[in-house]
Image (cartoon, rainbow, N blue to C red; front, side):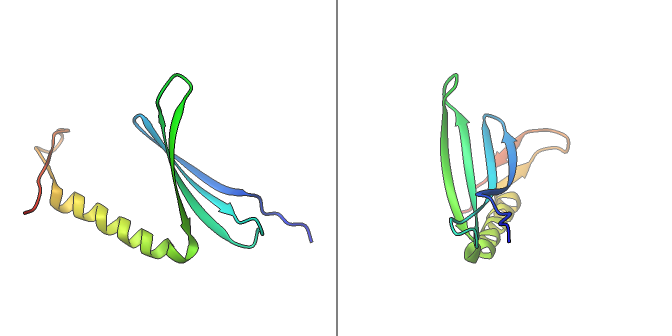
Length: 96
């Protein structure tokens, strides 16, 4: 039976200003398991990039997603106060 798995199975690129984020699904060396890498890439020169990588294993997917969702909801709901609708002004407010 031919093995159809490869090291990199899926990738999603998100461009965000000067940074680019890559969400990659990769197979393990045995090709029987999978994990996600999240890479932040930032240009620091003409052809030079600074990269930071997080490895996320399947047993932690739900915990990671729950923590990320909770953190984003907290920031959007409690720390960011938007000015008049249609403006881009954002004011950060900290709780005591």
